[in-house]
Length: 116
Length: 116
DNA sequence: TACACGGTTGAACAACTGTTCATTTATGTT
DNA sequence: AACATAAATGAACAGTTGTTCAACCGTGTA
Image 1 (spheres, rainbow over the protein chains, first blue to last red):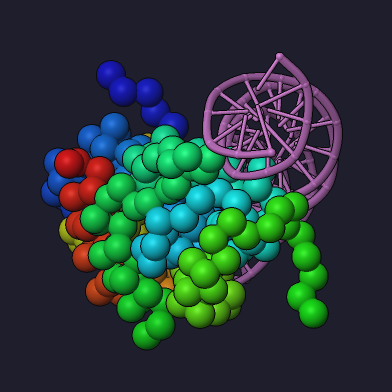
Image 2: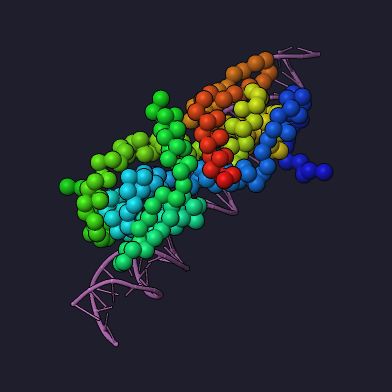
């Protein structure tokens, strides 16, 4: 039996029972919210936005965002782990580029939402 | 003159100058990342998902998510402030429903991304 | 080979976030 | 009018997050 944490009984038990089977797996839920968590930071949004225009190396991104290389590198790592950007070493520098087509679409949709 | 925080010079100044004018206003950036921040929590995703199926009152949502009414109410408030859900009092209860069409689309796109 | 430089890393710290708990408000019901 | 119940609220607490700082690694170049 599932562990109870609620502090009340259902008011419309029929609605609850109708909706329950439609709820996604907990696993999927966490993946979804983790994805949005990654997008939920203005620095990372800036990085994604910039990389949508052109692949760039860490130093140039730092200048563009007016941040330290370290801070940028930390956030690029988050994006890399989330498979949103890809790194490629070219000579002295590491060039980053977008690694996912969905991101552009989602950013656009979110923009529509925010701008309405 | 803008306050310098960077700890380095641009490597490809031409790329930086090409991308800079394409960057969004800081204001828009914050609105965007704030939106994603709201989506970046598994409880709130569950609430949105449930409300996509049916409008529901706080108590039923608490039972469905196996959480206290208080915790659910706090998160519904966040969603309300972000204009993602709407509250309507009916008799003894407060019924919540989705207040934004974009959310469904964005959730679907994010799902595609996560499931690929 | 030694150096300079681009990038990465880990620890530390302050700021923020989500749940819990106790209390309060509002309203339908008796 | 008094009570029971649905929901909201605020303070508090633990856990998480983003930037800074200092140190480090790796490699192209002198």
